[in-house]
Amino acid sequence: MWAIIKKEVKTYFLSPIGYVFIGIFLLAFSISFNLELGYSNGIIDFQNIFVYIFTYLPTILVFAFLIPMITMRSFSEERRNGTEQLLLTSPVSITKIVVAKFISALVMVLIALLFTGIFIGIICFFGTPDIPAALVTLLGFTLLCMAYVAFGIFASSLTENQIIAAMISIVTFVITWVLPEFIASGSNFSLINMFYKFTTGQIDIAYTLTYLAFTVLCLILTITVMQRRKSAR
Image (cartoon, rainbow, N blue to C red):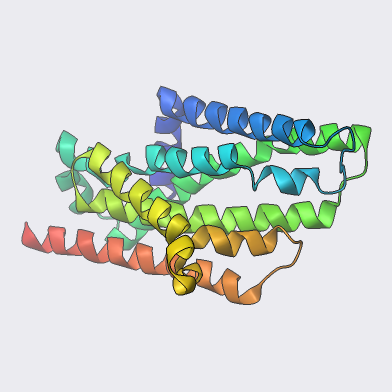
């Protein structure tokens, strides 16, 4: 399994995908940082500014479009290139393959989030941020990314077209994001709304379990799809 993880992570950095993903994410994060400074009216809340950055539209929008960029190729590319057969007949189990691809994509997200520590350093230089709240926000965002990565990989297992796989992820995310605006109970299905609870500095156990359960469910569905494809051959 670790060989697959190393191969997948290396693939991200041997192509422009990994660098573009990290670069655009940091650009969006920088824009959110500058927007927060611009709306501060000269009174900068250094204590919570790092938390606020994650709630700005550029960060959320780029997050919604970037993660499908790294998950869309997970299985779609294997099928399109004709290497899926080798994958399915390899001595490694389908479960390990799916988990390895999930971990590889998540590593990319974690690397991008690691670079946000630069902004914490900048804030610490000029003020005193609320580190516990910042860490809880990072935890919530990581859980959100885990769930979204797992769904993106599931979408990739459904089609050989990478664009269609990406669109499935993006459309699903956008629908669940705006659903609470039209249906009161829609907030129960909105992953992004659950994340906002973490920006208050509180770890919500129920939402944490929901993220983990959703992630596991998507991985199980992906394993099921791939097992059926293996059985059909």
